[in-house]
Image (cartoon, rainbow, N blue to C red):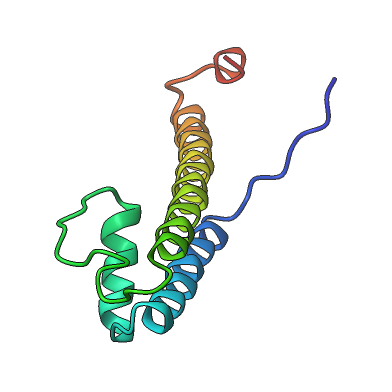
Length: 115
């Protein structure tokens, strides 16, 4: 019988995502010379793939625009992976909690929970 894995707390997933957005906001506020709130807005809108286009990196900085685009691409690549991982962990926790409630209510039998 394999050992039971410990679930990752939901608050930790939320904390990591918020920390990543704040770190990105700090990075873009320094690099692009945007305000911190504008940078946080850009990070949130871009990581959630909404992308209004009202803030675009490397438009205000003439020198090193290729570096700015590369940094933005890396930030987005890791950020979207972090969001996907966090959503998956939260989904597993919610499914586990729903199965426990269903078992207590008698909706599911013990052997149906492992499926």
